[in-house]
Structure formats: C-alpha cells, structure tokens
Image 1 (cartoon, rainbow, N blue to C red):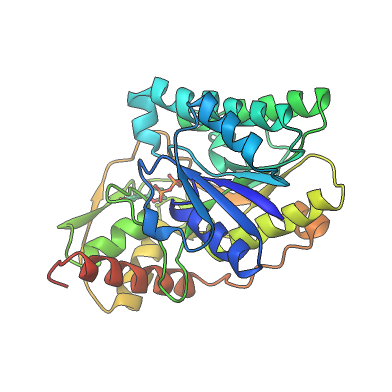
Image 2 (image 1 turned 90 degrees about the horizontal axis):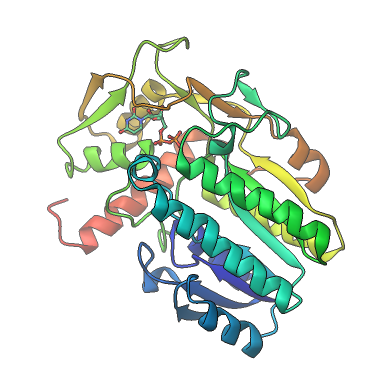
Length: 330
Ligand code: UDP
C-alpha cells in the first residue's frame, strides 16, 4: 500500500515506518522535524513540511495516491500544553483537521489516529474501557479529544473511515537500537529515569507518594512501542478489509507504580541514582490502566512484549547508544 505517515521522524512514528518498511509498503513521511529527526526515518521518502501548510499538503496528495494515512505528528508535553494551549490546539487539532480535510478532498478513506488515555482525564475506575467518560483535564488531552470528535462527525458525512488508538504509557525502543526516543526534553518516567542512570541528570523526582495506591505512587500501564505498532498494523488490515470506524485502547491491562519502575530501572541498568520524593505533579490520575479487551477481541491484538524488564532494557540500550553517539562521558 502507499501510506502517508505524519510525524514519521518522531519516536512512535519512526517505529511505525520501520514496521511498514519491513513489510514492503511504499511510505511517505511528512514531518516538520521540530522534534523528529531525519535519521530516524529508516524507510520511505521524507517530506519536510508543516501540516499548517495546506498548499504543501494539497500538492502532496495530488502527487501521490495514498491508500491510507497514519497521523502521529503532535505535541505531547502535558505541562507545556497548560502553559501554551494555543500551540496545542493549533498543532494537535487545527493541523489534524487540515490533514483530515486533505484526505476527504482526495478520497483517501483510511485514517489511523494517535489518540491518548489523556482523553479520559482522571477516571473514577482504575481499569478504563473505551466507554469511560472522556473528561480531559489539560489542553493536550482536550486537543486529542477534539480530533476524535471531528473524525466521528467527518466520517459520518464522507467516505472516511478511521481507527483511533488511545495510547497508554508508551515506552521501550527498537531491540536493534536503530531508533528510539530522541527528544532531549523528554519528561516521561522511563526516559527520565534512564537519563538519571546515565548521569545526565542529577536526580529523578518521584511526583507524589501519598496516592491511594499500594505504595503511594501512581500506577500506569506501560506498553512497548513495537506492540503499539502491531496494533496499528492490525487497524490498517481492519480498515483495508472494509471495517468501519472504531476506537481502541492500547495498553496491557495492568500497571506498575512509579517506585516499581524506578526499582526496575536500577536493576536493569545496574546503576543507582537519586530518586527524590517530591510533591504531586498537577493533574496526575492515581492510576491509569487500560481495559484492552476490545482491541484483543475485535482486532485479535496479542502483545509480545508485556514485560517491564524488556521495555526498560530496550530503552536502556537505545539511551546508551544515543548519548555515546553524542559524546557524553558514558
Ligand atoms: N513521574 C515521576 N517523575 C518523573 C516523571 C514522571 O514521578 O520525572 C510519574 C508521573 O507523576 C506519573 C508517572 O510517573 O505518575 C508516569 O508519568 P509520565 O510523564 O511518564 O506519563 P503520563 O502518565 O503522565 O502520561
């Protein structure tokens, strides 16, 4: 198939391109390289352009006849979205709308969207199904929910069919360390912990130890990026065989506390680092775990890497390679 991958130079998008390329698909990556990297694109043709550029999008859609679009390009830092909501509404919502409009105008009828568990806000139940009320508590989650709403409406009035995948906590890297999280200002727990283990940060802050959880720290459902990509491949097969629009959670269905993750990082890396208990970070739900029964049942998703140690090990190998390559003292 001829496939457009937006954000294909970024962390998750580059893993998508890897898998699509290995399966022989014809790929065009559309990325403005604001947080992505050219050398993360292992297959296909890279078009460096912005989704705000409607003219560039239109030209590309006229030149290439895409069978499907996978939309990864987005800003993802929750705190930043609170400080600068316009940036998030522009890029995550308005630019997504430009892309969806290009699909409708050029008769591309298959669309896969990177959504997020942040659409649920602070859910009342620990295990979150797709029918849990969506009450995002920050502009990041709200901007993703707005795209889901737009897709719902647009798919009713056009031939467009979509799958929206709500990611839980994506982590880990390519087992051959060709690609991984390259974002220098990464805020996610596993990346930050590994950078503390490498000595690139003085310490890791544990945000809150007084939650109503077994060890007082927050629980999250960490999913290996390659399992997430498998979910996209299944979604693509599903849409290709005529499936209608669907929304699926992507997580393993069980979680780990911040303390458990930090302990596992220390064990896997064999390095100790300071983990300082600090106050809560605003807007963190105590526990966020996917009920992923729908994607297992409807798409037959069977994760292969449901193993925190594997997730951390692949990320660790990647981080070591990344920072050695950049000349740090590791
Ligand atoms: N966390 C932490 N210290 C950090 C980064 C994250 O204690 O430096 C905690 C955070 O409060 C949350 C969990 O780790 O409870 C996962 O946070 P992350 O930012 O990785 O993902 P999120 O669940 O916010 O999408």
